Length: 78
Image (cartoon, rainbow, N blue to C red; front, side, top):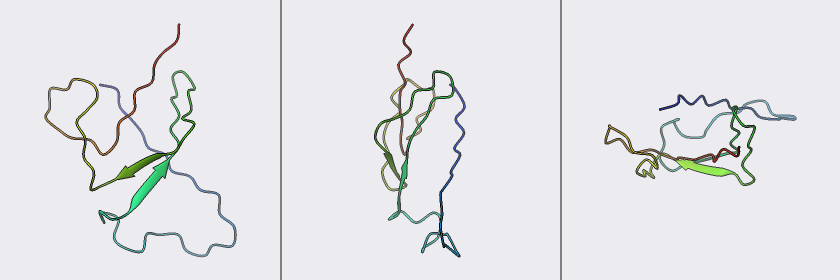
């Protein structure tokens, strides 16, 4: 299974403090990301919503019985 790294960046203007109002493990907060594949340079056209309260089964077979908060599959064109 490939390892995934999450890099978060923001463009801010006139903001003194940037932090969630609740704790970082609050299940009511939704996070929106635009995904980019470093191998094929594919970029998602729409933002992906990740919520800690929503769990889904992995899209790819896994030996573990874990559940993910979000999963994406990138198709390679050769």
